[in-house]
Structures are given as C-alpha cells and as structure tokens.
Length: 469
Image (tube, rainbow, N blue to C red):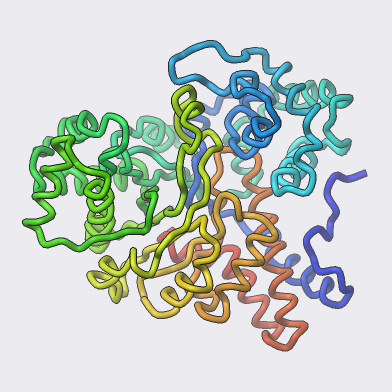
C-alpha cells in the first residue's frame, strides 16, 4: 500500500478536488527551481555516495532532530556534531533505530509528509517506518546508496532540478563551486552571498572576520570605505566563481537605517572597536541592509531578508553544537517601521528585488502584503521554516493574495539541508497552491484558464524572475 495518498492536500469536496487535480496535473512535472537552500556543494563537487541513511535523513535535518530532542533524546545520541569535537554517537544504525522507534512523533507534521514522500518515491519503500521495520529500511536505503543512480548528481537529475542554490559565508573560498564548474557536469549549482559573519557585530569572531575579509580582498577593512569595497569585491567573486544571483541576510529584526556616510563611518568605527552596545549593533545591521540594497542596484543580486527568527534560543545547545540546531524560534517583527529607511532610499527602484521572509505570520496581512502591493522592489518570500506546510502556505495565500496578488510574490523555495526532501517540499507547495486556486475557481473568483497560468507562475516563472535565474 502506498505511503502517500495521490490526492493528498486536495479539497474534500469532489468537484473542487477535480479542479485541484487538473491544475496539479498541469504543473506536477515542471522542473524544480531551488533558489534558496543549504545543501552542501561538496556533495555535487565530489559526487561520492551518501554515507548511510542516518547521515542522509537524520543528522543534517534540524526539522527531524529537533522533534526528537523535544521528546528527551540528546543531540549527541543522534550524531549531531559537537563544535569542540567531543564524542557523539557514531553508529549510524543505532541513530536510525532511535529515529525509527519514534517516527510516530511526526504524525500530522510536514516532516512526516516529506519523509514518506522520500521513502516511497526515491527509495521505493511502502511500509511505514517503525521500530519493527527500522533495520529493513536501513538495509534497503543503504544498499540503494551504494548504486550509481543514488549518487548526488544522479539524484539531482532524477529530481528534475534545473538550478539549486546553496548558501555560503562571505569568507568562503567557494572551492566546491569551482570544482563543480570545472568538472564539466551540466547540473547548475550556484551559491548565495551570506555576509552575516562580517555584518553582524554580535557574530562570534566579528573583528577577526573583518581582518579575514580584508586579507581576501586586499581592501582596508579598518575603514568604512574599504569595508564597503571589500563587500563589493566578494559579491563580484561570488558571481564569477559561484554563479550567485542573490545575497541572503539573517537578521534578528527587520530594522534598516539610511545614515549619511559620515555617521555610517562613525558607527562602523564603533562596531569595529568591539565596544558597540546592542542598540548600535542593531543599527549597524540595519545600515548594512540598505548598503547591500544599493550594491544590488549595481551588481543585480536579489536581496533576501530573513528576519524575525530568534536564533540559537537554547544557550546550551548553541554552546555545545553551534548554529542551526533546531532552536530558531519565531518572534514579533516590525516590517513597516523596520523597512522604511531602506524603502525611502531605494523602494521605488524598478531594477531591484528585495524578498522579505518572516516567521511572524501576523505581519503578512497587516504589513508585508500591503507594502509588497505598493513598493516595486518588494516580492514576498514564501512561508519559511515553521510555515512551509499545507496550512502555512494556505494561510499565506489567504493573507496576502487580496492585497499583493500573486505577482508580488517570489514563488517557492525549499530552504533545506535535507537533499532528498527537495522534491517532497516542492510537491507539497504545488499541491497546496493548486488546492487554493481550485477554491478560487469554485467560488467564481478566478477563471479556470487563468488558474492554470497562475499555477505555473507560482511553481516556476515567479522564482525564475525574482532570482534572475
């Protein structure tokens, strides 16, 4: 019996379900554009086999291990690396068993749907994962991973991925992207410029990071002018070597600033000294969003702002295991006030694209959609992190469509480290959007022929345009 209902996520009422199914059939096989995510470019540079099922499905996926941690499993028992190099569980089969015997915890969650999709459609498994089937699952997946057809590049092509963007620090040498490009493989894997380590004064090692930025670029990062020039140089490097079409900025708030050059230089001197107050650090992050927007006018990179995440909320997990370990928590976000300085500076520029992402859903209808429905630069990012689910996508459409329409949004991106979940996540988004469009058709708000066009745009064309792909 299949793990996945072929009509999953479609409306219950038969006539509306038929419309949703018809819309979905028209876009189900379109190529995948994955313009923002966190897969490791080394996978595609070396094209080595994935080590084992645990390393593929459990260890890198904070959606998975955070649920297990919430039920009392220790990160070290799931093989989550320690930043001090200390011991963690090294037996992948034991990690897998711990995951499998708790698989019921994922019932009703997006993770369950993504995992079941991967198990069935990638590996051909149709029994439910459990303690009883754990070893059979492990042996089956492990055997498949030894086959050439399950190497990273082969799966990339099988998944019909047209382009996949990874995310690298501004200080990364991009050697894996260079190796991909020089290998002659036709798969398109590009990078994204992520400068948090040299933009956020509260980022660990900020002063040393600025020194490294100066060494990489030959610019004097002891001065405001040299610091900005260094960013321009690194952005150019990311475009040339990694094919970057976007930058990405993970800020705790949506604050921006538009200081005059003298005041901005004074603020830089303060944060460079290490004596900045939290208020000054936040102001500097805000100023740098506006500076990055101005740079985007010159080099064409799309500007992504991921704001409203209270990152690394668990101090102990952060100290032991580092960033991105499942403890990023949503927080209230002021987009109207926060973005105003940036929008005053560049908001009416027709050749700039700024994509805001939020974990504060309450802002969609009240703030983000009205702004995107007016400012040419803004294109709403899709539901992110906790909300890239059927309910989250539906709420997003309901909150934003009447004000911003469909064409002031940026399509879908999966934002994942879990490679095999990419087609599953895109399938959920396609089904969710088709279900929403079917309701509009059924209630006379959208013509069916227009719904077919919108379904394709949401699946493919909007992301291609927003990210310059």
